Length: 151
Image (tube, rainbow, N blue to C red):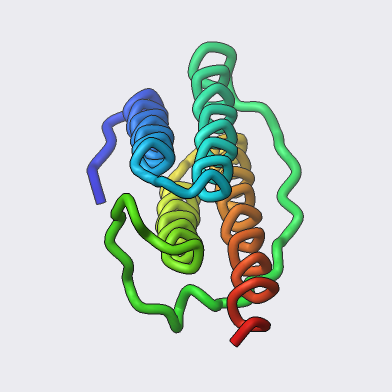
């Protein structure tokens, strides 16, 4: 993980990661030929834009305290093979890709929370980790409902 000299370095890193997630989901949406998949990826790009906005607000106005209600993890992504993005990817492949991306984001924010020295920053990163966990959970439920139950 990157070494940070101050809280602005941490926030800049996290803002950059959120922008990378936005770009990732928009690229997948543009690449997809399936309208349902396009819609889902656009929705998640919007969610990541909200995370970026929160981080930018914290950078300008200081840390705020967020709630961190734990989210259940179905752990489906732990048992799925990696998928490469492609224009013709199936709905199943799109869900797997999204689950893996959200899991990585959850791990990142959990690690940042563990490294933050200020309680307000720890709380903010734990909150963002829980948001990413919610996204992953949504994809896992969708996968369970529409992929596993059909097979």
